[in-house]
Length: 179
Image 1 (spheres, rainbow, N blue to C red):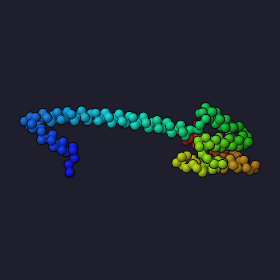
Image 2 (image 1 turned 30 degrees about the vertical axis):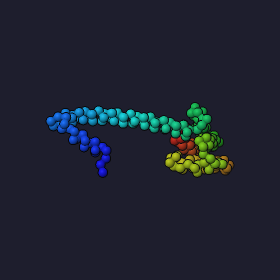
Image 3 (image 1 turned 180 degrees about the vertical axis):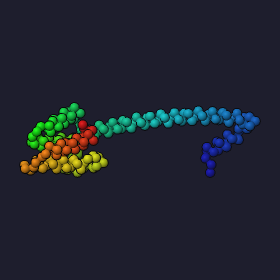
Image 4 (image 1 turned 135 degrees about the vertical axis):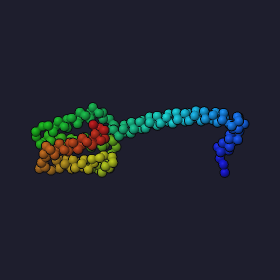
């Protein structure tokens, strides 16, 4: 069961001595043709690699656009985040609490804009895996702190705790390429 290629090869090999005493001229011509074909195939492979690379770049750009929060520009995000961070620089506990609450609200807003569904932030956070957001467990802790601030009027917040919660939200927002 021979393929067409082997049949062709047999015909060429049988005809080789007819083109010279030893067939050397014919083989030399075949070598030149094979070098030309090899160069063309190599050029085709290089062309396809560049096309594939361009296609992957475009796919990544589209994926990044889909993940980013629609209707929220980088400038607006940065300004909103700066106002949150500035509250940490004040020397009163109520400002620190407000910073944590606003950071939590900002993060929840981003989750809503990126398509996470749920009645509250807890339901949206349940949908996120560590593969999607590396510090999701820490975000849960920061969210619990926010809940304690909002629901327990006696809850005391230290500046270091508030700063840590803000850092957690900031890392999550950076991972999502919002900040």
